[in-house]
Length: 84
Image (tube, rainbow, N blue to C red; front, side, top):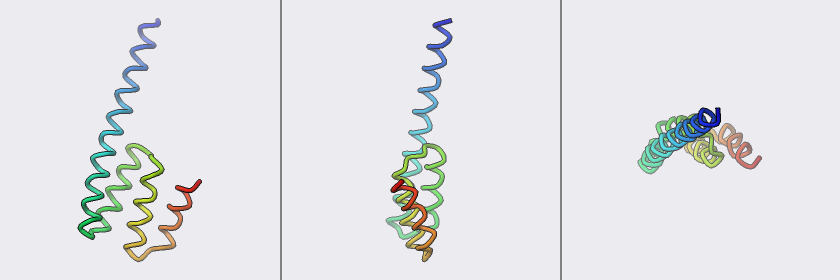
């Protein structure tokens, strides 16, 4: 029974790391798009990254993208979520 529990814990950790790795790759793509001033793509990549691994830091990236897209009120909501 202990072996099964250990296997489940290890599998869970592996899945969590895979999600984090995918999120990191999506973040990189989003940062490239943001640097290229393609804010719609950047926002989409940051949102995808957040779905993979909901790091609060990504909320700031989404908010900044929305600000650049001329949607500061919507972006403010993401900044507020980050500050909570």
